[in-house]
Length: 314
Ligand code: AKB
Picture (cartoon, protein in one colour):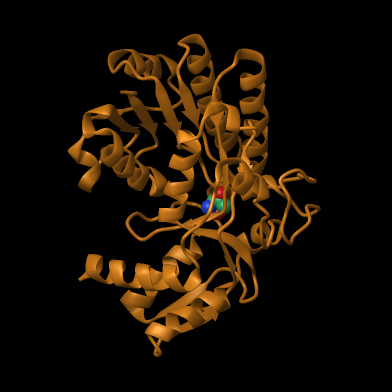
């Protein structure tokens, strides 16, 4: 049985992915790690405190638990990255290079590292953005993800490191809140709908962005990691798509369940980040090469989140 280390396990994706991996592989085979202490379900399995910048500490954890797979999820996201670009660059790049070098030197079996739609920029085609196209990101987060993709492909080509990656759209779940992203509004809106009955969006009403429900993100990640090595043809990062919608459209969907819900718009600095990203993504390669197929549309996602979050908040 492979021994997995999840880095950034307390984050929005990490907390759900760690639980999903433990259900499949057994608690004892999935070591969670983060700079913060775990809470909730995460605390039910093995955990290590880890600062991703500390390569020696990372190596010690790999040795201690005989780790052979790493899911490296820790990163500074788009909006937070703009507040301290140098720190975002240092953290996102140093942590990835630490993981890739250790994977090479210790001959680890597989690595997962997420990229993002933030690798695209203002000159990228906006509709059905293809896998291979103009990439001119203008956030430090997007620049670090694009550089990271190049490093992943480099480590695969030069050293045979089996690293796999997805360009996630905005991830929408209700069990853990995201921190510091531009797509976070699509999570906040559900909390505010249930708590206050109204929401002020920091993006304008017709801002379309590619999004994905958390269960689909977890399915995509596990499907890619379980695909035979030969089928993984793209070693930078795969486009994956599920849903595209605007704040106005998600608000209308919430109103179907809560007619009294209202939304207002007060765009801030995150609007220009959103404007530089695609409206929708083409994921032909992921569908053809390893069978990607999302399960949640806007309506199914909205009813699932409202039901689940209501139970959580009650
Ligand atoms: C962000 O908004 O920064 C992230 C992302 C799209 O990668 N959710």
